[in-house]
Image 1 (cartoon, rainbow, N blue to C red):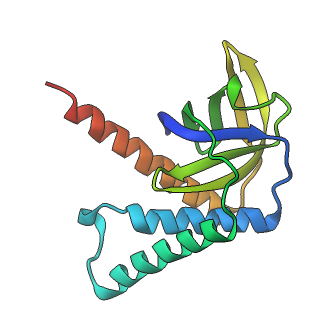
Image 2 (image 1 turned 90 degrees about the vertical axis):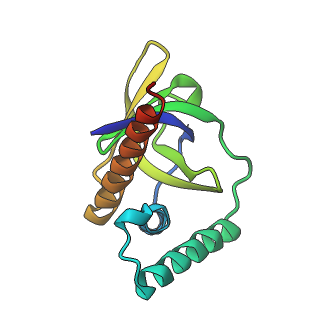
Length: 158
């Protein structure tokens, strides 16, 4: 499964430490808690508390490490294995993909990998093997974004 859309993203030559991978996992899980549609929430007090905690954790992470300048929105195809991004996203020898996950929170998650091909003005970026929990969180993110894109396309039909 993959999703297509325009998100703030960038490629960079930078190491992605174990701490950064753990932070990415936490941020993806928190974002999932915040973005879960109302119909899929349990609606109990624990669920509401988890959503509030997730929002606070995301904002605290942003305050602790605010971005210098948010990257521009780029057309991206994202999957669990990697991403296809325009060459303007960064160099062909990049070692990390930075994704800003929500318009309302300019917090970047860095995922390690490498550019495996460049053609027609686009880089194919393959993720390095990710820890299982981060892989699961990324899979849920791709699924949510894919489902959201399908819902939007259905709304635009006459």
